[in-house]
Length: 411
Image (cartoon, rainbow, N blue to C red; front, top):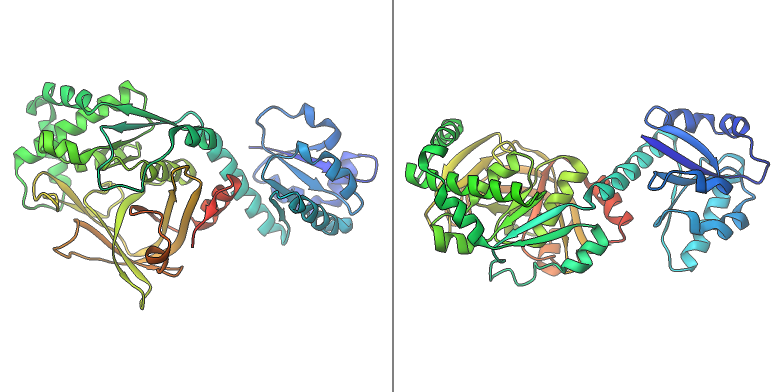
């Protein structure tokens, strides 16, 4: 990983002298990056698209910086270790930038904390570049009950560089009818043997769902999709298959997949994959306990590899087809959602998964989470229905990523 530091110093630039003065920080950064010290006057020599950050070397450079702040990546993040009054200059610079209604952040503190912040900053920077050009497929149309979960294709592309691809459900149907039970039988049998149990389902249900998975996978390959969301409502009407199993198995293969045609949820799931490398669980907040600060997240599908063990069951709403009931380890989780029509708002909270419930009036996978933020958010100012659960605490990197991309936090 290359890190280009734009050096601002009031003295004549001498690389050896700069390095010696700030040696503790630079040596710590070199454990993770190939470090390039570049005087700000030579910014044109830095490769296009490279990871760069302004470094304030002493306290007499504020006037020089503000004359050249247009060369900084935006939103502006300034690095200062405090040597030679550099923190004082960084504070003055950041205050001036904010008077222009622009965002400026200072990375400063213990060397270990500064390195950690730079690594988060780089991870968010790299994830934004990875998102550019990604293709999200919408097979069919969004479910009619998702009245607040749409996305503006043009504005989403401008902000994130992601392309939404509309694909008629009939393309999947045509492939589905061309796939025989014999083609999917072996894999269906292997899946059934992996499951802890099969409840309220039939072998015919499993074969139908596996055929839909095969057909959806072929469409993903044809359109070179990086993520996909299915119109499960229309698919059940037309095929008597909900696509829950297809969604679970595609997620297992590293293709973020969701149901109901929820564009905001699938975009969030793709962000999770690019930013953390993890699967996510798209779920409904189904019960909320304000007193205990708990939310019960439930849905009818989850990646089987995300679960400690899983059960194949009938779909909750229709009592037909196949749903996946995943059982997960207790432990730290993150609840995340990128929402609004322009995908420029977000919610993120740490939490702790305390229990896998089995309430008969809810979707099959049910996870009870004690949140780290007030659960009233869901009742007072929610970003729609579906939210994404990730195993582990990724709040810091998500916060860095969303703030770099100038998104507004909802609490």
